[in-house]
Length: 150
Image (cartoon, rainbow, N blue to C red; front, side, top):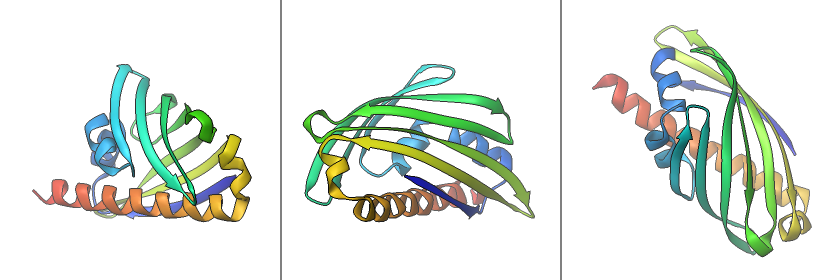
């Protein structure tokens, strides 16, 4: 699955960069995220519970931040296992550009899934991924808009 898009975040680029590297903020914004903890400067461990169509699973995974170019861009990649539901792995290239008093966040995602999840069909997976991404950015934008105006 490939997906790309851009979002205007109502916060400065430095604020957005700091938030994208803050596990407490990301945990609040990632749909179904139960825990997100830093293992090292570039590694995080996550537990996410999701329901995609008829399949519900808790994914345990590792997240790595690479190609760091603060506060402009990075690559975030991860791999997680949902037990019998299957696995998911992939990555996203994220770029931040100043836009007046806000920031344009551009992303390109490449992901693979296997197991029962793969049997759901690409249309359901694609629509679910777009819905999850939209929810993340809505929550992220709201949280940062409140923080930046405070």
